[in-house]
View 1 (cartoon, rainbow, N blue to C red):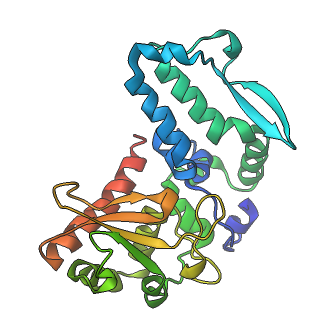
View 2 (cartoon, rainbow, N blue to C red):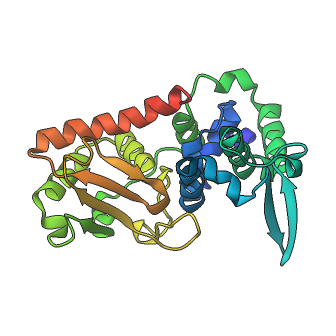
Length: 267
């Protein structure tokens, strides 16, 4: 991978977002867990609502792994089996789960990956990039066929009945069609977590578990959210019902930019 970058050759395979962050030495964030396992993310997030009752879960700082139908207990921190989960140590519990799920599970492989890259390219040379720029550097700008993207898009929520014929959806595709390739790639990263287009086109876009899950535009009331928001686990964006094409164009570009800026500041 490092040799490919050094020689200016593009890498065909794309990685999940947090791995590009790991290469750059950025810390992983709780939202990164949502990108790969939204169900587990929501279960951890919901623990906060339990308050002091969380102690009745009788959980500790361990997790269970299963390999070839053989289960084993893994400590999330040293001595984790002896640390009971409480309301007070919930933040540490979430952080320990986050680091294990995204990095600890694959520590050996990730270390080899970094050694291979930095053996060819000095680490400081990559620090000028953010993780999205690194993906584009390694994999290049994808050739995004807007007609294929549009044809393989599903609609839900307030757009369920009219689909692509809804006025706001018409505006959306008109705006996106005017984007250059880089901005289209940024939008694809915002919506799906990667700028990669499947070899067989958008009809083969996958969910994080390998199942085919097409891009979806979900209609929501403007009172629900001012800006478009993404659910990368499901290749979906929530698109508010804007009153004009200009408003949609402005808010969509801000949403894409904000997503990039938030990651750039390691929130």
